[in-house]
Picture 1 (spheres, rainbow, N blue to C red):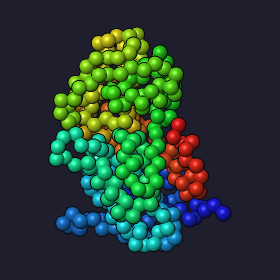
Picture 2: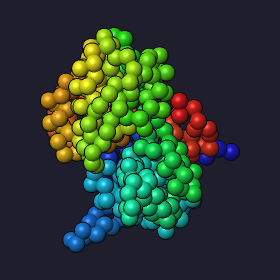
Picture 3: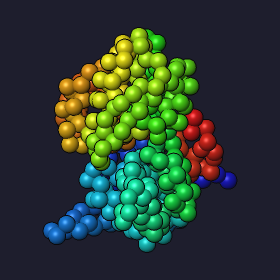
Length: 316
C-alpha cells in the first residue's frame, strides 16, 4: 500500500519560506512546525514542534545567500529530525551553493561542492532533491540518491508565449552547450555559442559568436546569474553581431554585487528567472526581471518520491 499524505511532513528553513509555502499549497500538506532561532553568539537552535517518528520528511532549504548560514541551518534541521526518529529525510535544495567549486582549477584549492555533499550526507539526509546543478557530475559526490530537476520546461513555456520572433538559443560559454541544446530543442530553434574567456572569478569577457544570430531574437540560457557580467557582455556581443533583441533566462537569480545595476543598464529586453532563490527588494523593483515559480515541479517530485513513483518524467 502506498503511503498517504498523512505520512508526509514538510519543513522549511529561513532561506526561502515563500517557495516552501507554494509547494505546501500544491501538495495540500501544511508546513510542519519547527522553531528556529539564534543564540546571542550567533549559534542556531532548532526544535521540531511535532511528532515525526516514522514519517517521511522533506526539508526545503536552498543554500542561497547568506550561503553559510542557510547551509548550517539545513544541517541542524536534519540532525534534529534524525534524532526525532524520522523514517526518511529528503533534503530539498533548489539551489545548491558552492556548486561552482566542483573541481580543482589550481594547486592547493578545495573542491567545496564535494565537501558540501559530504556534510549533507553526514547530517543523515537519505536523499537529495535539487534543481539545475551547475555541474551534473556533482551528483556523483553523493552516496545517496540525487534527483536533479530542470527548470527548462517552465522557462521555455514563457519564451514560447512571450517571444514571437524567430529565436536562437545562446549558450554563454562552452560549458553550457548541452543545457542550451536541450532548451533549443524545446523551442525548435537554432543554437549559438559565445566564446567566453574568464580572466578571474566573477570576471569574464565575451568574445566570438559561433552560430547565426543576425536578424533573430537571441535568448541567452544559463543556470544562474551572479554578478551579471557574463549576461550583459553577451547581450552586447549578440547585438553587435546583428541580433534583433536579446533576452536572458536563468534558473537561479543569485544577483550579487553590481548585478541589479548591470541588468538595469543593459540592453537586455527581459531577464527571466525562477524562484529557487528569493528576489531582493532591488531585484523585485527591476522591471526587466521576471520571476517564474517552480513550486509545482518541486512539489510533484516530492509527491512522487513520497509515493515511490517515477520521477523521470519531470526531467524533460
